[in-house]
Image 1 (cartoon, one colour):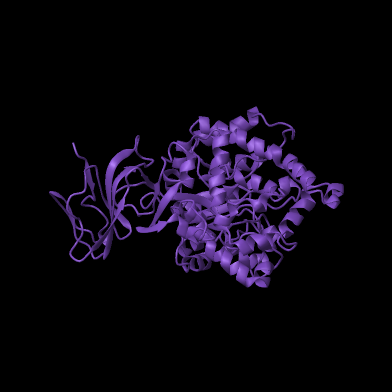
Image 2 (cartoon, rainbow, N blue to C red):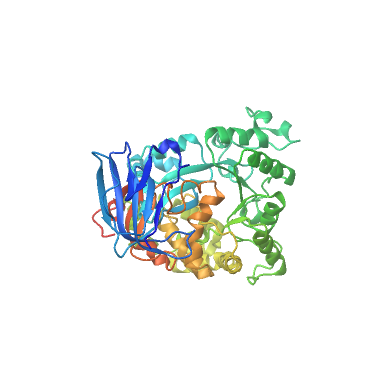
Length: 520
Protein backbone atom coordinates (compact mmCIF):
# COMPACT_ATOMS: atom_id res chain seq x y z
CA UNK A 1 0.00 0.00 0.00
CA UNK A 2 1.32 3.42 -0.93
CA UNK A 3 1.80 5.77 1.99
CA UNK A 4 1.12 9.49 1.60
CA UNK A 5 1.79 12.24 4.16
CA UNK A 6 0.46 15.74 3.70
CA UNK A 7 0.15 18.92 5.71
CA UNK A 8 -2.74 18.69 8.25
CA UNK A 9 -5.64 21.15 8.31
CA UNK A 10 -4.15 22.89 11.33
CA UNK A 11 -0.94 23.65 9.44
CA UNK A 12 0.37 27.18 10.12
CA UNK A 13 -1.69 29.66 8.10
CA UNK A 14 1.28 31.92 7.48
CA UNK A 15 2.64 29.35 5.04
CA UNK A 16 -0.28 30.05 2.64
CA UNK A 17 -0.31 26.50 1.31
CA UNK A 18 -3.92 25.24 1.00
CA UNK A 19 -3.89 21.58 -0.07
CA UNK A 20 -6.52 19.25 -1.49
CA UNK A 21 -6.40 15.48 -1.54
CA UNK A 22 -7.76 13.87 -4.68
CA UNK A 23 -5.69 11.70 -7.00
CA UNK A 24 -2.41 12.71 -5.42
CA UNK A 25 -1.70 16.05 -3.78
CA UNK A 26 -2.63 19.35 -5.33
CA UNK A 27 -1.40 22.60 -3.80
CA UNK A 28 -1.46 26.25 -4.73
CA UNK A 29 1.14 28.68 -3.47
CA UNK A 30 2.53 32.11 -4.13
CA UNK A 31 5.99 30.49 -4.21
CA UNK A 32 7.53 30.82 -7.66
CA UNK A 33 9.99 27.94 -7.21
CA UNK A 34 9.25 24.51 -5.79
CA UNK A 35 11.52 21.52 -5.23
CA UNK A 36 10.80 17.82 -5.53
CA UNK A 37 13.17 15.08 -4.43
CA UNK A 38 12.39 11.68 -5.95
CA UNK A 39 13.38 8.10 -5.03
CA UNK A 40 15.21 9.14 -1.88
CA UNK A 41 15.58 7.23 1.40
CA UNK A 42 14.54 9.37 4.36
CA UNK A 43 16.51 9.01 7.58
CA UNK A 44 15.01 11.02 10.41
CA UNK A 45 15.57 10.62 14.18
CA UNK A 46 11.91 10.20 15.09
CA UNK A 47 11.66 7.17 12.76
CA UNK A 48 12.60 3.66 13.86
CA UNK A 49 13.79 2.78 10.35
CA UNK A 50 14.61 4.51 7.05
CA UNK A 51 11.82 5.28 4.60
CA UNK A 52 13.01 4.19 1.12
CA UNK A 53 11.78 5.27 -2.31
CA UNK A 54 10.22 8.46 -1.02
CA UNK A 55 9.18 11.65 -2.74
CA UNK A 56 9.55 14.88 -0.80
CA UNK A 57 7.91 18.08 -2.03
CA UNK A 58 9.13 21.48 -0.83
CA UNK A 59 7.47 24.84 -1.37
CA UNK A 60 9.45 27.89 -0.39
CA UNK A 61 11.37 26.87 2.72
CA UNK A 62 8.90 24.22 3.96
CA UNK A 63 8.33 20.52 3.44
CA UNK A 64 4.70 20.20 2.30
CA UNK A 65 4.41 16.53 1.37
CA UNK A 66 6.15 13.21 1.81
CA UNK A 67 4.92 10.18 -0.12
CA UNK A 68 5.92 6.57 -0.67
CA UNK A 69 4.77 6.27 -4.24
CA UNK A 70 6.34 7.26 -7.54
CA UNK A 71 5.68 10.89 -8.44
CA UNK A 72 2.69 11.37 -10.74
CA UNK A 73 1.60 14.68 -12.11
CA UNK A 74 2.60 17.86 -10.36
CA UNK A 75 1.82 19.66 -7.12
CA UNK A 76 2.81 23.01 -8.46
CA UNK A 77 0.55 25.91 -9.05
CA UNK A 78 0.14 27.67 -12.38
CA UNK A 79 3.36 29.28 -13.54
CA UNK A 80 5.42 27.69 -10.76
CA UNK A 81 8.76 26.19 -11.70
CA UNK A 82 9.65 22.86 -10.11
CA UNK A 83 13.25 21.80 -9.60
CA UNK A 84 13.56 18.00 -9.52
CA UNK A 85 16.39 16.24 -7.72
CA UNK A 86 16.96 12.53 -8.31
CA UNK A 87 17.60 11.01 -4.89
CA UNK A 88 18.12 7.46 -6.13
CA UNK A 89 20.73 5.78 -3.94
CA UNK A 90 20.89 8.81 -1.60
CA UNK A 91 19.72 9.52 1.94
CA UNK A 92 17.76 12.60 3.01
CA UNK A 93 18.39 13.68 6.59
CA UNK A 94 17.75 16.79 8.68
CA UNK A 95 20.50 19.40 8.67
CA UNK A 96 22.83 19.27 11.65
CA UNK A 97 22.64 21.58 14.67
CA UNK A 98 25.76 22.67 16.55
CA UNK A 99 24.38 23.96 19.84
CA UNK A 100 27.65 25.49 21.09
CA UNK A 101 29.55 27.91 18.85
CA UNK A 102 31.03 31.39 19.04
CA UNK A 103 30.79 33.56 15.95
CA UNK A 104 32.11 36.94 17.06
CA UNK A 105 35.64 36.78 15.63
CA UNK A 106 37.75 35.54 12.74
CA UNK A 107 39.24 32.10 13.58
CA UNK A 108 42.60 32.37 15.31
CA UNK A 109 42.60 36.16 15.47
CA UNK A 110 42.20 38.60 18.34
CA UNK A 111 40.59 42.04 17.84
CA UNK A 112 43.93 43.84 17.36
CA UNK A 113 45.02 41.30 14.76
CA UNK A 114 41.78 41.72 12.84
CA UNK A 115 42.39 45.47 12.79
CA UNK A 116 45.95 44.96 11.56
CA UNK A 117 44.89 42.52 8.81
CA UNK A 118 41.38 43.56 7.71
CA UNK A 119 41.52 41.78 4.34
CA UNK A 120 42.50 38.47 5.91
CA UNK A 121 39.88 38.84 8.62
CA UNK A 122 37.18 39.73 6.10
CA UNK A 123 37.96 36.72 3.91
CA UNK A 124 37.91 34.41 6.92
CA UNK A 125 34.63 35.81 8.23
CA UNK A 126 33.01 35.41 4.82
CA UNK A 127 34.11 31.78 4.64
CA UNK A 128 33.13 30.69 8.17
CA UNK A 129 29.37 30.30 7.44
CA UNK A 130 30.13 28.29 4.30
CA UNK A 131 32.51 26.03 6.22
CA UNK A 132 29.82 25.09 8.72
CA UNK A 133 27.47 24.31 5.83
CA UNK A 134 30.20 22.28 4.10
CA UNK A 135 30.00 19.72 6.92
CA UNK A 136 26.20 19.82 7.09
CA UNK A 137 25.57 22.31 9.89
CA UNK A 138 22.50 24.27 8.84
CA UNK A 139 21.75 25.63 12.33
CA UNK A 140 24.09 27.09 14.95
CA UNK A 141 23.56 28.40 18.47
CA UNK A 142 26.01 31.03 19.70
CA UNK A 143 26.25 30.69 23.47
CA UNK A 144 27.39 34.22 24.19
CA UNK A 145 26.05 36.72 21.74
CA UNK A 146 23.65 39.59 21.16
CA UNK A 147 21.50 41.01 18.33
CA UNK A 148 24.28 43.01 16.65
CA UNK A 149 26.26 39.85 15.98
CA UNK A 150 23.21 38.17 14.46
CA UNK A 151 22.72 41.08 12.08
CA UNK A 152 26.34 40.82 10.93
CA UNK A 153 25.99 37.06 10.44
CA UNK A 154 22.74 37.38 8.51
CA UNK A 155 24.38 39.85 6.13
CA UNK A 156 26.28 36.93 4.57
CA UNK A 157 24.72 35.77 1.32
CA UNK A 158 24.82 32.11 2.36
CA UNK A 159 24.84 31.07 6.01
CA UNK A 160 23.41 28.58 8.52
CA UNK A 161 20.54 29.80 10.67
CA UNK A 162 22.01 31.37 13.80
CA UNK A 163 20.36 31.66 17.22
CA UNK A 164 21.90 32.94 20.41
CA UNK A 165 22.02 32.72 24.20
CA UNK A 166 22.70 35.72 26.36
CA UNK A 167 25.87 35.33 28.43
CA UNK A 168 24.97 35.85 32.11
CA UNK A 169 28.38 36.02 33.79
CA UNK A 170 28.73 37.30 37.34
CA UNK A 171 30.76 40.51 37.70
CA UNK A 172 34.46 39.87 36.97
CA UNK A 173 33.92 36.12 36.76
CA UNK A 174 34.71 33.79 33.88
CA UNK A 175 34.89 34.61 30.97
CA UNK A 176 34.83 38.36 31.71
CA UNK A 177 38.26 38.05 33.31
CA UNK A 178 39.94 37.71 29.91
CA UNK A 179 38.79 41.18 28.81
CA UNK A 180 40.50 44.24 30.36
CA UNK A 181 38.50 46.63 32.52
CA UNK A 182 36.39 48.65 31.87
CA UNK A 183 35.75 47.26 28.37
CA UNK A 184 34.55 43.97 29.83
CA UNK A 185 31.42 45.58 31.23
CA UNK A 186 30.38 46.83 27.81
CA UNK A 187 31.10 43.47 26.19
CA UNK A 188 28.84 41.60 28.63
CA UNK A 189 25.53 43.45 28.55
CA UNK A 190 23.77 40.63 30.40
CA UNK A 191 26.18 40.46 33.36
CA UNK A 192 24.64 39.61 36.73
CA UNK A 193 25.16 41.56 39.96
CA UNK A 194 24.48 39.12 42.79
CA UNK A 195 22.10 40.18 45.55
CA UNK A 196 23.95 41.66 48.50
CA UNK A 197 26.83 42.75 46.26
CA UNK A 198 25.16 45.84 44.80
CA UNK A 199 27.67 48.20 46.44
CA UNK A 200 30.51 46.56 44.50
CA UNK A 201 28.86 46.98 41.09
CA UNK A 202 31.19 48.54 38.49
CA UNK A 203 30.85 52.22 37.73
CA UNK A 204 28.02 52.87 35.30
CA UNK A 205 26.28 49.56 36.07
CA UNK A 206 22.85 49.85 37.68
CA UNK A 207 22.41 46.77 39.92
CA UNK A 208 18.65 46.90 39.47
CA UNK A 209 19.12 46.35 35.73
CA UNK A 210 21.39 43.35 36.35
CA UNK A 211 19.40 41.10 38.64
CA UNK A 212 18.73 37.60 37.27
CA UNK A 213 15.16 38.59 36.44
CA UNK A 214 16.20 41.80 34.69
CA UNK A 215 18.89 40.23 32.51
CA UNK A 216 16.61 37.36 31.45
CA UNK A 217 13.91 39.86 30.54
CA UNK A 218 16.39 41.82 28.45
CA UNK A 219 17.72 38.69 26.72
CA UNK A 220 14.22 37.55 25.84
CA UNK A 221 13.36 40.98 24.42
CA UNK A 222 16.57 40.88 22.37
CA UNK A 223 15.58 37.57 20.80
CA UNK A 224 17.72 35.12 22.79
CA UNK A 225 16.44 31.54 22.84
CA UNK A 226 18.46 30.53 25.92
CA UNK A 227 20.52 31.75 28.87
CA UNK A 228 24.19 30.81 29.29
CA UNK A 229 25.92 31.20 32.64
CA UNK A 230 29.30 30.10 33.99
CA UNK A 231 30.75 28.29 36.99
CA UNK A 232 34.52 28.39 36.52
CA UNK A 233 37.11 29.46 39.07
CA UNK A 234 39.68 29.77 36.26
CA UNK A 235 42.44 27.39 35.17
CA UNK A 236 41.25 24.55 37.35
CA UNK A 237 40.64 26.92 40.29
CA UNK A 238 44.06 28.57 40.17
CA UNK A 239 42.66 32.05 39.46
CA UNK A 240 40.01 31.91 42.19
CA UNK A 241 37.54 33.84 40.05
CA UNK A 242 34.11 34.84 41.37
CA UNK A 243 31.38 32.27 40.66
CA UNK A 244 27.60 32.49 41.02
CA UNK A 245 26.04 31.51 44.32
CA UNK A 246 23.42 28.77 44.36
CA UNK A 247 20.62 31.23 45.19
CA UNK A 248 21.68 33.42 42.24
CA UNK A 249 21.63 30.51 39.79
CA UNK A 250 18.29 29.27 41.03
CA UNK A 251 16.85 32.76 40.52
CA UNK A 252 18.27 32.78 37.01
CA UNK A 253 16.71 29.38 36.29
CA UNK A 254 13.32 30.47 37.65
CA UNK A 255 13.35 33.65 35.58
CA UNK A 256 14.38 31.80 32.43
CA UNK A 257 11.76 29.10 32.84
CA UNK A 258 9.11 31.75 33.41
CA UNK A 259 10.22 33.22 30.08
CA UNK A 260 10.10 29.71 28.56
CA UNK A 261 13.78 29.53 27.67
CA UNK A 262 16.37 27.00 28.92
CA UNK A 263 19.50 27.64 30.97
CA UNK A 264 22.92 26.29 30.03
CA UNK A 265 25.83 26.34 32.45
CA UNK A 266 29.50 26.32 31.48
CA UNK A 267 30.76 23.62 33.86
CA UNK A 268 33.93 21.64 33.11
CA UNK A 269 34.64 20.18 36.56
CA UNK A 270 32.93 17.98 39.12
CA UNK A 271 32.33 20.90 41.52
CA UNK A 272 30.73 22.89 38.73
CA UNK A 273 28.56 20.03 37.47
CA UNK A 274 27.36 19.25 40.99
CA UNK A 275 26.43 22.94 41.28
CA UNK A 276 24.59 22.73 37.95
CA UNK A 277 22.51 19.80 39.17
CA UNK A 278 21.69 21.52 42.46
CA UNK A 279 20.66 24.69 40.61
CA UNK A 280 18.37 22.84 38.21
CA UNK A 281 19.89 24.01 34.92
CA UNK A 282 18.69 22.40 31.71
CA UNK A 283 22.01 21.81 29.94
CA UNK A 284 25.56 21.32 31.16
CA UNK A 285 27.81 22.92 28.56
CA UNK A 286 30.99 20.82 28.48
CA UNK A 287 32.03 17.39 29.59
CA UNK A 288 33.74 16.43 32.84
CA UNK A 289 37.31 17.55 32.21
CA UNK A 290 38.36 18.21 35.80
CA UNK A 291 37.66 15.88 38.71
CA UNK A 292 38.07 18.16 41.71
CA UNK A 293 39.62 16.46 44.71
CA UNK A 294 40.63 13.32 42.79
CA UNK A 295 44.30 12.39 42.23
CA UNK A 296 45.42 13.71 38.84
CA UNK A 297 46.51 10.21 37.82
CA UNK A 298 42.97 8.87 38.29
CA UNK A 299 41.03 8.38 35.05
CA UNK A 300 38.75 5.45 35.94
CA UNK A 301 35.33 6.64 37.07
CA UNK A 302 35.21 7.06 40.83
CA UNK A 303 32.05 6.70 42.97
CA UNK A 304 31.83 10.51 43.21
CA UNK A 305 32.02 10.97 39.43
CA UNK A 306 29.56 8.14 38.79
CA UNK A 307 27.13 9.76 41.19
CA UNK A 308 27.27 13.03 39.24
CA UNK A 309 26.77 11.22 35.94
CA UNK A 310 23.91 9.12 37.31
CA UNK A 311 22.18 12.31 38.42
CA UNK A 312 22.61 13.71 34.90
CA UNK A 313 20.89 10.61 33.50
CA UNK A 314 18.11 10.54 36.10
CA UNK A 315 17.41 14.25 35.73
CA UNK A 316 17.47 14.05 31.91
CA UNK A 317 19.84 17.00 31.93
CA UNK A 318 21.32 17.91 28.54
CA UNK A 319 25.08 17.24 28.38
CA UNK A 320 27.50 18.59 25.77
CA UNK A 321 30.80 16.63 25.86
CA UNK A 322 32.67 19.19 23.66
CA UNK A 323 35.51 16.68 23.38
CA UNK A 324 37.36 18.23 20.44
CA UNK A 325 38.14 21.40 22.42
CA UNK A 326 40.82 19.58 24.39
CA UNK A 327 42.28 18.00 21.26
CA UNK A 328 42.35 21.47 19.72
CA UNK A 329 44.58 22.74 22.52
CA UNK A 330 47.02 19.91 21.79
CA UNK A 331 46.84 20.52 18.04
CA UNK A 332 48.33 23.99 18.52
CA UNK A 333 51.58 22.20 19.38
CA UNK A 334 51.44 19.72 16.49
CA UNK A 335 54.16 20.83 14.04
CA UNK A 336 52.24 19.19 11.15
CA UNK A 337 48.80 20.51 11.97
CA UNK A 338 48.77 23.43 9.52
CA UNK A 339 49.74 21.03 6.71
CA UNK A 340 46.52 19.04 7.13
CA UNK A 341 44.85 19.25 3.68
CA UNK A 342 41.40 19.31 5.28
CA UNK A 343 42.07 22.85 6.48
CA UNK A 344 42.06 23.99 2.85
CA UNK A 345 38.39 23.07 2.64
CA UNK A 346 37.32 25.38 5.48
CA UNK A 347 39.87 28.20 5.70
CA UNK A 348 41.26 30.55 3.01
CA UNK A 349 44.81 29.60 2.01
CA UNK A 350 46.25 33.06 2.85
CA UNK A 351 44.79 32.69 6.36
CA UNK A 352 46.50 29.34 6.85
CA UNK A 353 49.77 30.91 5.71
CA UNK A 354 49.31 33.73 8.24
CA UNK A 355 48.86 31.20 11.06
CA UNK A 356 52.45 30.08 10.41
CA UNK A 357 53.79 33.59 11.06
CA UNK A 358 55.01 34.71 14.50
CA UNK A 359 51.91 36.87 14.83
CA UNK A 360 49.66 33.98 13.85
CA UNK A 361 51.27 31.86 16.55
CA UNK A 362 50.44 34.32 19.32
CA UNK A 363 47.81 32.19 21.04
CA UNK A 364 50.06 29.14 20.77
CA UNK A 365 52.73 31.16 22.57
CA UNK A 366 50.31 32.24 25.30
CA UNK A 367 49.19 28.66 25.85
CA UNK A 368 52.76 27.36 25.77
CA UNK A 369 53.76 29.63 28.65
CA UNK A 370 51.05 28.06 30.78
CA UNK A 371 51.62 24.46 29.69
CA UNK A 372 55.33 23.91 29.11
CA UNK A 373 58.17 23.99 31.64
CA UNK A 374 60.57 26.88 31.07
CA UNK A 375 63.52 24.79 29.79
CA UNK A 376 61.32 23.10 27.18
CA UNK A 377 59.72 26.42 26.26
CA UNK A 378 63.15 27.92 25.58
CA UNK A 379 64.43 24.86 23.70
CA UNK A 380 62.15 25.43 20.67
CA UNK A 381 62.04 21.64 20.23
CA UNK A 382 58.68 21.33 18.47
CA UNK A 383 58.42 17.53 18.75
CA UNK A 384 59.22 17.56 22.46
CA UNK A 385 56.77 20.41 23.06
CA UNK A 386 54.04 18.46 21.29
CA UNK A 387 54.71 15.40 23.46
CA UNK A 388 54.61 17.56 26.59
CA UNK A 389 51.32 19.17 25.54
CA UNK A 390 49.74 15.78 24.91
CA UNK A 391 50.86 14.59 28.32
CA UNK A 392 49.55 17.76 29.94
CA UNK A 393 46.05 17.43 28.48
CA UNK A 394 45.83 13.66 28.44
CA UNK A 395 44.29 13.36 31.91
CA UNK A 396 41.42 15.67 30.96
CA UNK A 397 40.96 13.98 27.56
CA UNK A 398 40.75 10.50 29.08
CA UNK A 399 38.48 11.57 31.92
CA UNK A 400 36.06 13.28 29.56
CA UNK A 401 36.13 10.27 27.22
CA UNK A 402 35.32 7.87 30.06
CA UNK A 403 32.54 10.07 31.41
CA UNK A 404 31.00 10.46 27.95
CA UNK A 405 31.15 6.71 27.31
CA UNK A 406 29.45 6.04 30.65
CA UNK A 407 26.60 8.38 29.75
CA UNK A 408 26.27 6.94 26.25
CA UNK A 409 25.73 3.40 27.59
CA UNK A 410 22.94 4.76 29.80
CA UNK A 411 21.24 6.61 26.96
CA UNK A 412 21.77 10.00 28.59
CA UNK A 413 20.47 13.20 27.02
CA UNK A 414 23.59 13.92 24.97
CA UNK A 415 23.61 17.13 22.92
CA UNK A 416 25.96 17.90 20.08
CA UNK A 417 28.06 21.03 20.61
CA UNK A 418 31.65 21.84 19.71
CA UNK A 419 32.52 25.19 21.34
CA UNK A 420 33.92 26.34 17.98
CA UNK A 421 36.23 28.14 18.59
CA UNK A 422 36.80 27.76 22.31
CA UNK A 423 39.54 30.42 22.29
CA UNK A 424 41.24 32.63 19.67
CA UNK A 425 42.71 29.47 18.15
CA UNK A 426 43.06 28.19 14.61
CA UNK A 427 42.82 24.58 15.87
CA UNK A 428 39.01 24.57 16.17
CA UNK A 429 38.25 25.29 12.49
CA UNK A 430 34.60 25.92 11.58
CA UNK A 431 32.68 22.91 10.30
CA UNK A 432 35.67 20.58 10.34
CA UNK A 433 35.76 20.87 14.13
CA UNK A 434 32.24 19.40 14.23
CA UNK A 435 33.17 16.44 12.07
CA UNK A 436 36.20 15.77 14.28
CA UNK A 437 33.95 16.02 17.36
CA UNK A 438 31.89 13.18 15.93
CA UNK A 439 34.99 11.02 15.68
CA UNK A 440 35.87 11.75 19.31
CA UNK A 441 32.35 10.85 20.41
CA UNK A 442 32.46 7.52 18.59
CA UNK A 443 35.88 6.79 20.08
CA UNK A 444 34.29 7.37 23.51
CA UNK A 445 31.54 4.83 22.82
CA UNK A 446 28.75 7.03 21.47
CA UNK A 447 27.06 5.19 18.60
CA UNK A 448 26.50 6.82 15.19
CA UNK A 449 22.74 6.85 15.77
CA UNK A 450 23.27 8.62 19.11
CA UNK A 451 25.47 11.21 17.38
CA UNK A 452 22.79 11.63 14.71
CA UNK A 453 20.05 12.21 17.27
CA UNK A 454 22.21 14.50 19.44
CA UNK A 455 22.97 16.74 16.43
CA UNK A 456 19.37 16.89 15.21
CA UNK A 457 16.22 16.24 17.24
CA UNK A 458 17.76 16.27 20.73
CA UNK A 459 19.38 19.65 20.12
CA UNK A 460 16.18 21.01 18.61
CA UNK A 461 14.08 19.85 21.56
CA UNK A 462 16.53 21.13 24.18
CA UNK A 463 16.54 24.61 22.66
CA UNK A 464 12.87 24.95 21.79
CA UNK A 465 13.40 24.60 18.02
CA UNK A 466 11.76 21.24 17.36
CA UNK A 467 8.66 22.73 15.72
CA UNK A 468 10.94 24.14 13.02
CA UNK A 469 13.91 21.80 12.58
CA UNK A 470 15.49 18.53 13.69
CA UNK A 471 13.47 16.04 11.64
CA UNK A 472 12.29 15.42 8.07
CA UNK A 473 8.57 16.05 8.54
CA UNK A 474 5.67 17.93 7.02
CA UNK A 475 5.73 21.62 7.95
CA UNK A 476 9.37 21.64 9.02
CA UNK A 477 11.90 24.04 7.56
CA UNK A 478 13.68 22.55 4.56
CA UNK A 479 17.16 22.55 6.08
CA UNK A 480 18.21 19.12 4.87
CA UNK A 481 21.14 17.02 3.72
CA UNK A 482 21.44 14.64 0.78
CA UNK A 483 24.11 12.07 1.60
CA UNK A 484 25.65 9.00 -0.01
CA UNK A 485 25.57 7.02 3.24
CA UNK A 486 23.14 6.58 6.12
CA UNK A 487 24.17 8.97 8.92
CA UNK A 488 22.44 6.82 11.52
CA UNK A 489 24.87 4.03 10.67
CA UNK A 490 28.17 5.82 10.08
CA UNK A 491 29.60 9.25 10.80
CA UNK A 492 31.51 8.97 7.51
CA UNK A 493 28.22 10.05 5.94
CA UNK A 494 28.92 13.64 7.01
CA UNK A 495 31.96 13.73 4.77
CA UNK A 496 29.91 12.23 1.94
CA UNK A 497 27.38 15.03 1.63
CA UNK A 498 26.15 15.53 -1.94
CA UNK A 499 23.82 18.52 -1.50
CA UNK A 500 22.86 20.86 1.30
CA UNK A 501 19.33 22.25 1.33
CA UNK A 502 19.09 25.57 3.12
CA UNK A 503 15.56 26.97 3.37
CA UNK A 504 14.74 24.88 0.31
CA UNK A 505 17.68 26.19 -1.70
CA UNK A 506 19.90 23.42 -3.12
CA UNK A 507 23.63 24.01 -2.72
CA UNK A 508 26.36 21.71 -3.99
CA UNK A 509 28.99 20.91 -1.43
CA UNK A 510 31.87 21.96 -3.68
CA UNK A 511 30.37 25.46 -3.87
CA UNK A 512 31.05 25.86 -0.15
CA UNK A 513 34.74 24.94 -0.02
CA UNK A 514 37.13 27.66 1.05
CA UNK A 515 39.21 27.16 -2.06
CA UNK A 516 36.62 26.46 -4.71
CA UNK A 517 38.88 24.63 -7.16
CA UNK A 518 39.33 21.79 -4.68
CA UNK A 519 37.35 18.56 -4.96
CA UNK A 520 34.68 18.13 -2.26
